[in-house]
Image (cartoon, rainbow, N blue to C red; front, side):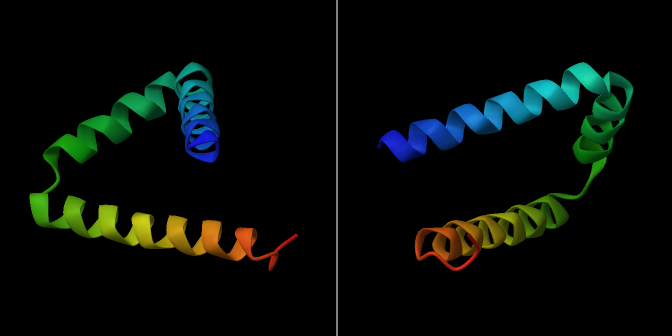
Amino acid sequence: MTDFLAAFGLLLALEGIFFAALPGVARRVLSEAADSPVERMRLVGIVFAVIGVVVVWTVRRGGLL
């Protein structure tokens, strides 16, 4: 649970930096996402979830660092 909370905090920090540093880009990205078809958003979500699991799994077993 500690790792999950640490990862969640890192996610919030990175999103905060993105919104603070590039608010115009963030607004455009959110607008484009809102206009995207549901199927595309679902596919992108699945792809990113799989990438995230692979990264965590690789790092946890000592493969990258």
